[in-house]
Image (cartoon, rainbow, N blue to C red; front, top):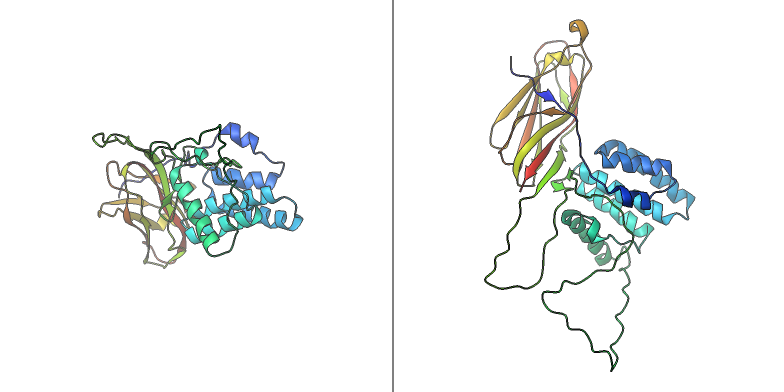
Length: 321
């Protein structure tokens, strides 16, 4: 019998700044509930809660800021489930609700800023939303010389509404990691000086789009996902939920992109009774392996007269890059 994988708790899906959360707090309990679900990585529940909150806020009217906030967190939740197009659509709804909305680059990791900026540029190019108006710089006077901008001086963007979506935490979506990390540096400097890059550690989570999968009696089900983020694995968990007449009939195999496999067996209930549900997370040892590539999960039904379904699964990895 293969060694059973050890179950571990899912922690640290998204890290937030308490001070700024308090600053942006709202009295809307449903909206706050959905935001909290997104913060802890419960993306499926967050989508249900935030979608209901957004519909209600839209019907009530007069609360564009809360409505835009609901759509932004819906975008994050869809990213967490690897549904990039739906995430872009929700961010577009946020822009429609509040076209003056600005994301402060000091409060977000570069990958999220890039995703939101691409979504905004696409919407402007397609004429779906109006460009964000800019305030012209005052003309210099005769007694006030115009300052000179050098190559080493980065352009400063104006601040705006601050929403703390990520503050050093991580999750992943469609191969897009919701991960904290330093922004890219611009500017000049000596041509002989080569900047050094410190290693960055982050959590990424990718859920398979190939679900649900039926598990036939005395047969097996296959499902795959692709991790697009490259890095060296430090910690690794597999998330899954399986419903079956008797989960102790089942075996499960997870295959790494390099062909390495890990196996687990369905649990027995008290006194050997059948259980109808088997779910993770379970940890597996993949330290120092690469993260990117195609991962495969296989669920095998080994005994007759029962069947079930693989409802959802994904991998959650802490990587160094």
